Image (cartoon, rainbow, N blue to C red; front, side, top):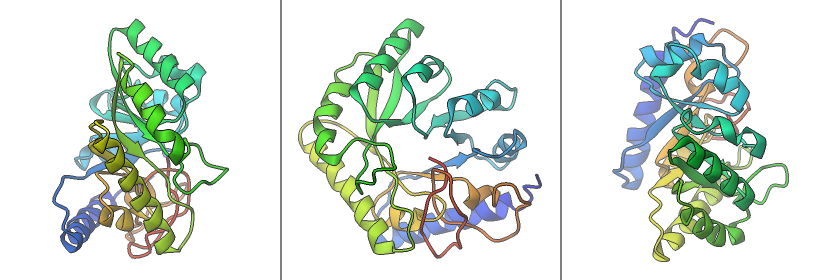
Length: 257
């Protein structure tokens, strides 16, 4: 694919980060995870050439095909999609951060695999704030006990929370989801857990996520253009799953998490 518009799209995203943070008083740095899901390996090279070194994938197998390349070896990889227990063995040494830990059994398996590899794995707890049955993530009410359990595992480093907002054009609904995650994180920190990372916002909804305090946004089409077509000059707005592109102003939907 032709990723000639990537630099322009990235400049737009960085401008949106500055504008949204200025409007809401946030000053913390924001990490852009470039989601290469659904794009060929040349997307990895294009991202690195543009200065994007944090790259994300939804599926382990697709990620490994990109990680185990010369270009892939120069990137910092994030696993942003659902992780099955039988794929946990592939995580240590390959993924710098797992955004989608959502169950005690998975945490224990990942801890065991990390111990065998002689390393620790950085993780985020995925919370299904909106309560959507089709999405992964623990229920908000289960987040505190699960977070404490994960934090006690010797080879996992719990660093924060992740969520995916409903696939909707209703910005207020998106905002409620992101605000709910932020409030949940603040409550956990009051209990003594240090959780600096809030991974929320994708290509169609990263604007409201930034306004609600996101520290990590997961962007695919906002950077690379629509999957399966040649990217044009227009930019998207969001971070993390498999979904539609959006105009920069819209702020709705899923991207690649």
